Image (cartoon, rainbow, N blue to C red; front, top):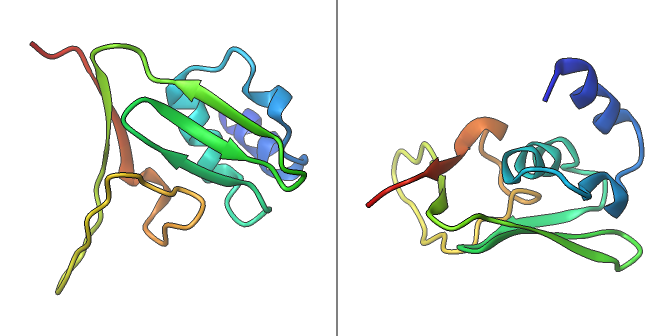
Length: 103
């Protein structure tokens, strides 16, 4: 995603239509850029999920042989994070990664 596209996503209202045809990587970028504007987003082992302020839900499926890893810089404690809520996580936006192709 280019900087201008990211800036545009941050300044315009988030809509389910913006997720049509996007890659999982772009969906995660949008989830991070929509933080704080009422869109709830989280990633599971199979999809990036979104719930919009009007109640509409949308998901972007993860392809086979891909998984998401969320990394947090905890100093004194941690917590299990099977479902990572990007809309509620206070860690830096670049802490979620999509890994591909393993045996």
